Image 1 (cartoon, helix red, strand yellow):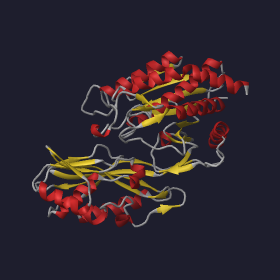
Image 2: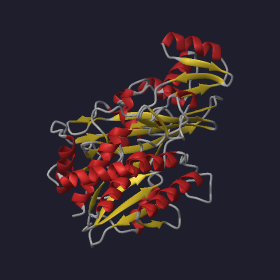
Image 3: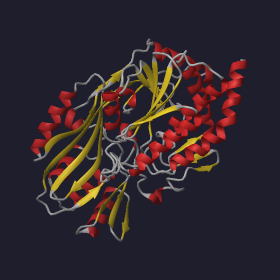
Image 4: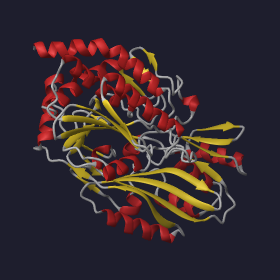
Length: 449
């Protein structure tokens, strides 16, 4: 009990510094910019990486910056064995600024919540785990193993950062990523991102969506027959706004792993265009096979398993210029063979004059419930929260736990909390994050014994 009280006192001492440091990191709009040839993922992401490493140095860690700018890490402790904590400092775009009640890149605190892009995914949890470790350091805890925080910079896209780390650096024996929910995620669906493309023979030009792994919350059409489109959208019951730059079909953005909880504005726009007589490869594909179905059942049939649930199918981006391109994100059950997905979608796309191209793939993962890592983390979670009801879960999310062996996703959201990652007004509850810091501190102490 004395040790527990000491930990709480140390966490309270540094809580304000945690808030300040997180807000400063939120202020950096670390969205990918691949047009910047100086840095692999853009100036702002590199700035956020360097800011994070500078914070780690102030907290007493030894740091390393990859000279090419793909990743960095911070380490404390001694011993041959290495424990890893994997976090990422890149974020998805803010999206429509009108949907935010506060500036997305300011870290605004209102009524015990901090708002801003990256507060929950993943700057907030990563910085919380850092400060949790700092509390242990202030207590004089001896780390019998080395604890290494590894910071990725391309998690929201192609994971080139973590792939580069795996190629060049030492692998931890086990660890976790604070980028999901408690109590922990022991299985993650396979992730497959693809592009379906074909020659544009329609004359229609438009572009919609910001990210494959987010359901698009708006899609703008500024071509001909806008009045007819508005009448069609009214008939369909699809909300929209009339603006100077065109008709903006409205949706609801959520993470692609939760596609069924969102409203896909791209799908609705293409349904509306079909309604007023437009046709094209992607218009026909979406109207025939997708419409508003988030599970892809018209393409694949029902794909589901008991461990990880249903396949999730999300059209995250659309581009019509010289070509028609659909950018699709799929999360498929852990027992489903990737090749089955590839062959079925390729055959189906070909019927519509569309060519299949793989954009990204992450294999599914599964860590047994009797693994030392799972048992240790569950024990700590239950000790701190007194929650003996919540159990480890499977997820459609793609976290860095897939990047290395013997890793799981561990927090920082709690089972009852609203999930706001990738959405307007993303936030964290500061008191809940403080509890997460206590969990992380005790978990890191146990893993590093």
